[in-house]
Image (spheres, rainbow, N blue to C red):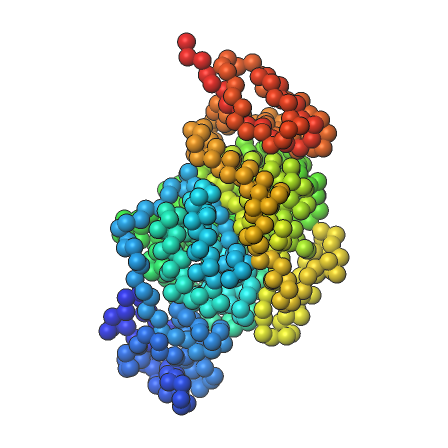
Length: 597
């Protein structure tokens, strides 16, 4: 379907349905049975209806071989949910124009990940947009939205999306997303959108009826794998490529976060990620504004960000779970589940220095060697975080780091993240140690599916030692409700103190030249795992952290120059020109003023 932002008279109702011998367009006027119009087919499996010309607001669906009404796989809107008729949408033009806005450089960025439904009590794009000035004042440069493609029900994380071209009505639909992006750009913030191309959700997923969108050659943890390299896969790949270009082009979004790219099984000579990067680069050149691709991957493989000229995929950045795991184990002591084999402070130091902890070494949780060295790629190719939707939400109770490790250790984690040589990413509410957890919630209409999700969730956590009764019911509305942020608590007590700490850290990152970018060449790291301290040096700035409960003494050396205290997390820390003494967890940031002779 050619449903572009600015529709022309040449737009027609169309659908790729090579599996069907007869395709009919169903047009609904709301008062009578839908009008049935036979569609003409071409040699590539596309069906077209020459008449009538689509109009904004038309409700329509397709019938395959006389079967029931099915929504358009490329519909921009599903006003009645993922099972209902689609609506033809012409998006409103941006209020700012394409030439006025330029996104901040990722190398000097600070990303803020949020879930539209729980970020505010309103749970919509418009409600979230009211908080954009706060994020700008905080020092955030990029806002990352968890998936917004239409899924079953009215609430969920977004990773069960089935109408990938449609914007979830619960959030405000296509127009709401346009307004949100415009508001971010007006405040100077870039927008990153999380998209899921490795699988589709289980409810309302009708793609297999239209054509060979899936394959039995591979499996994913979430079900059928997308057909990226089998027979008739060219149009499936086009479905993904056009979707990405729609978000970036029609909605003016600045970057895509590609979910779990390790589950994109593709043996083609040109991998789907490389092809996507080529097309996004072309879009950037044609519009004069750079768009980015950021991968989530557990492969620990720098090929994702390596240039295509040397056999890489040419993506712009990737998430670094190893940094998170190093921080988490060092501060909580947890070593079960996928934390098996992580060594706390020693691994944290390695991640700060080398990016990947598992860079070809044996991984106990996988029971095999894993990864390869990250090489000399700059720090802005990697995102660092101590919390995100996965690492918080994929716990039985959705506990945040402060809930597990306490306030002082959470402050240490924030400092190591925000002052790391990577692009820091925060998760909604962590900057004020939000009391709300972030739990896993769904709203499936099929009761059998809801029960299967509930039982599967409880089985999943056995490797962590969590009891089934500790896992909230994802289908229960209260699981969603307790995950909504309470903005009123920001200004009170420990929450206000944590927010002030984050503001100071962000201020340091943005003003200190040695901290502002992502230069890995100036990084050195020392640590004492037994004493529980770590010393990160970035140019003339020293970040010294104690992660344990006991006392620790860290000698800074005798380099020439005066030392200035930039930041200290607690009164129980003694700072001298050459030694820092801790009586518990804490962090100190100092700067050497080098003497010029």
